[in-house]
Length: 69
Length: 209
Picture 1 (cartoon, rainbow over the protein chains, first blue to last red):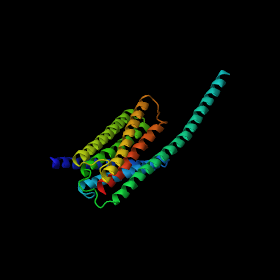
Picture 2 (cartoon, rainbow over the protein chains, first blue to last red):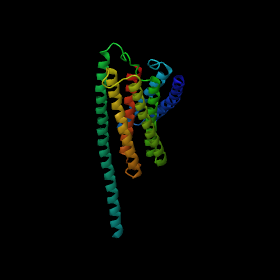
Picture 3 (cartoon, helix red, strand yellow):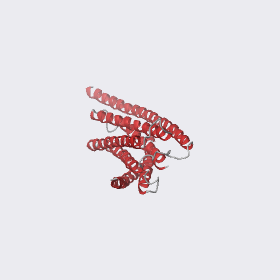
Picture 4 (cartoon, rainbow over the protein chains, first blue to last red):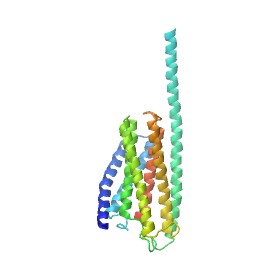
């Protein structure tokens, strides 16, 4: 049961993680040529959000963390 | 005479409108600076707690302490993606408002609220597991104290964000914002992105590091 739950969690994280990562990249590129204060803050926050997606995907694949404590 | 008066009135109206636009832009820039400073002050608040956590973590030999396995990495990763996804949907909500697509704005905002609530429920589930299965308490260990304090502070920010976004929904339905004047929505989006980004650091510190 726990293996099944872990499998579902991994699959969902990978699937939605990739979608959110690509979306964050698209949104960042759309904001790239805007230079108002809120645009610059948004760019930084979107880039960090993409980094967060990499973190979560890496943790799911076992590259980061301790493979699920 | 009447026509001249009408023209004068029209010009005066246009000038007044232009001035109020200029005034709005000035007020908006001040608000934006103030809101950015608020976000920076919140960064300092989280930084203080994070440094306290790192200091305390270095005072013990084994992390997590014996008897505590720590939070579930896979569940944490899934919950993180839920929160990051809500950041993306909020961004789309603001974009749609800028383009006048109110219907899509409400859909994306609704999805943001749903994902934010999902994340909070995930946090509660995680707390329950830690409390009942691993007997981690706020006062019981350094792990419990730091984990519950930092993630609790973040969860409080998410909760406030959900209330904030709900108020924005109510305000937009009452016509508070227009397609040209929507600072509240910009601030709401920035706040929600900020909450996402804080979690990037917390996820790394508690689940990966």
